[in-house]
Length: 337
Image 1 (cartoon, one colour):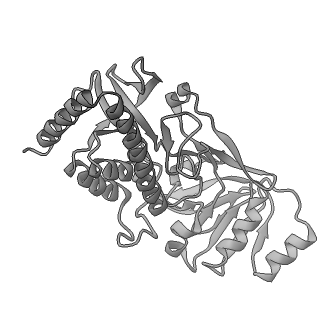
Image 2 (cartoon, rainbow, N blue to C red):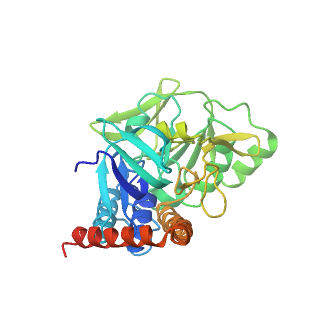
Image 3 (cartoon, rainbow, N blue to C red):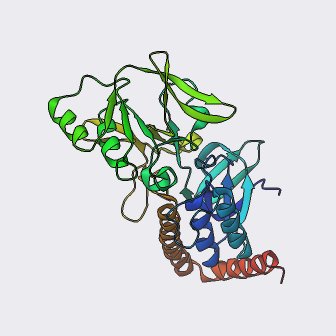
């Protein structure tokens, strides 16, 4: 697809659940929409998407591919690539330069770039991420129910994690790792739920013939079936930060859990003409929530464009009518009519 200097009413950056959902809703609203997707989904290592009503257990790639096909049916366009530069366009809207040199102009932008999971620096841990190394019990708890679950202690949230994962298994071990000595109250809570505490730093993850067998503590193997960690969730903006978008820290009490792109109740960012949806704004949102957020943002963006269309129509009805005819012809071509 030759994108050089093509203009769209809406460009969505990010083709996961949020971005593809926004594209589907926008295309059904008869807007010209392009999705630019780097093809690096956060949930790629996972075997299936969970708690998605009607699609429980669907592989992530299969779910997004189905959504993309639906959006394309209504005329949405998709391009695999990365935005490497972003600026305000001279005539209004935004000009995005993609890797490879092509540039497109968007009247409105939807940021659905997701987040990056920054994992604790334990050897071998990253290679098992999304398989036996987990963080969300609502995403993966059922799959490891009643098995031996170890929780890596990298901060105060580890105590909460251990007590939470106890809902899915009676065999939970808290690895103190980087934690200070536990207080009497914390010990009492863990003891009440039968959670074992193991001192000493975790030196690595043990894998034998591509089979996760446990973690190494004090030079010895501690067998377990799953390792729970607490990543730092970092909003992914890349070159879009050049538009003035800024992230903010997210804390639980005094604990920094990550950064997010702040938005208002409609999904609008602080930069006029830019909306956002999905994990880039909601660090703990699941896939079905991201899809819902994408659809909601699409409605808000369409309403904003309707108001802009009205202002132009009142200023110069003839010019607007010419554009409507051109859009109708373009739509017919996209649908093969």
